[in-house]
Length: 450
Image (cartoon, rainbow, N blue to C red; front, side, top):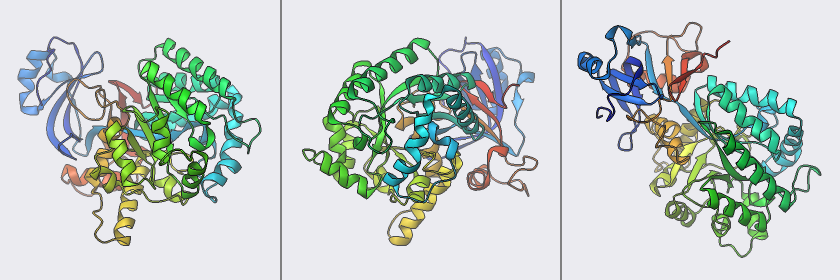
């Protein structure tokens, strides 16, 4: 990696030790005894071998005695990117997994989400989900909120206050017959979406941005989908929704939109399939639909815990990657029963192995590939890879300081091992107790300040 083009930038912090990250060419790059400098803007100023300490300290104007040295059982990795999480479902995470998707939404989800008109309730839940995900290493989250504008704005404020990088979406749905008061009119949805976007942008949070959020084709009329596509286009905004999660859902979409060739074509026709679109699930997409995703630069969020927990389907990630479609991982709380991206990593590998059991010719995903999906892949899926995802010079320092020998932790440190093996153990066995520090844009956000 090259030196920074701005050696005159003031250096705020320098770390020395083992760093592991992904690049476009390499699923896992291990850098031993490396020096990483963070400037006062929270960006990575340099990334060079430890042997260059003397020269770097002169070039960038820091004292070698101020370097933070990692222990042999510690390493830095990029922050985890959750590309799909329903913040307003966190209150019942870990429960209510006894029904398929559509019945689950009617029975559990919509009644709970309707409560978010109560801002005190919203603040309690949203504060908990942001703090929990940060402690578990999620430095970037793409959140679904509810249909309530003020509560959705509150989620943006809470993410900003905690220091998490976030895309926040006010949910749009003008079709819902199961919960009487949990839907909007077409006009309300349009007006409140515009109000949400304008107000969130006006607040100028440095790391929080709005995302246009039609819930999915089943809960939106074609007119609303089209209007949301126009709103996103006007301000060049991110878009998120769901697609092809469950076979019953796919069948009903076909009935509701008979003029469309496929589920993907529904979003395409309404200008909702762009290079800033991330669609959750995609378990039942055809190869032709994946080609459309590739052509438009749209992304998929793989949510394996939810896919299994609601018996929705198994996404063939290898096939998605072979189609060169951008893909990240998502927890999909509360269809997924864990808010930890480490769980998403594990369930991604489990799903890949189940597909191999079903078809021995299926090439399973390696842990290195899944590591990339959880970090750089997620940032690419959210079109944020110019800012985060790995340790490239010039990007924001979004990072986890991992201690695999944390006292009382879930892992036993028996002997010193190669960093690659240590990372694999952490991904399979670790939890928040091993995440000693979390940084977002150079700011230490975990441990929380009292």
